[in-house]
Image (cartoon, rainbow, N blue to C red; front, side, top):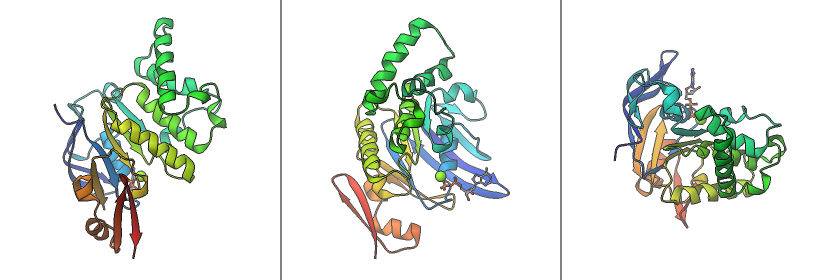
Length: 260
Ligand SMILES: Nc1ncnc2c1ncn2[C@@H]1O[C@H](COP(=O)(O)OP(=O)(O)O)[C@@H](O)[C@H]1O
Ligand SMILES: [Mg+2]
């Protein structure tokens, strides 16, 4: 087994400023990581390196055994599922939910063959059911609630059976009910034995699904803490990272935090 993500001394410099600064990080296939940290800490940038969307300015990034800068990123990206709000805006409102998910595999394979279409269609229905979108297959994307739209984005990202799944704030701005539903479905997926390596970015500890095994705390482009989730997301480390007196609790596999 080799790591799904291996970053060695990775920096990303923009406008002469390192927005990711000398990061060392490994993600193994059986691990589910959450990345937390303040706004502007560099979480999305780190995820975009992992998604082979951008290259480090310096250092070495090896994603699924391929080193960025030495590999055809278009091929590499077909092995990675990436859901972020900036990608979501590309789904046309008039597209049906089924098509929005199914076309993920056309993007990957470029095939328009009827025989494969039926395989893809069966798989798309299976993925939609798994993400509790089965009843919405024929609805147009534009008519969905925000929570349903977010789940369609994730369903699209897992449709191609990726070896690495990256989720950038998958439940941000959802109301409580859609947030909880989506967190539960991500948690179910994360704990299933054939799930790929998963990395999820969030601002809020309350949004960490059950089944996540590791955490990375990013502050000012640097890794502040990394490791097993329960020894990384602690009152002490979080208080230090945010410069606030914070108390972290965990109940039923879910985190909460209080300022005092
Ligand atoms: N392409 C870019 N050019 C210049 N600055 C950028 C660029 N992308 C991100 N930044 C800046 O880098 C910092 C980290 O951004 P980002 O990775 O989006 O943080 P986070 O996701 O943790 O909020 C922010 O200050 C952001 O404004
Ligand atoms: Mg971000």
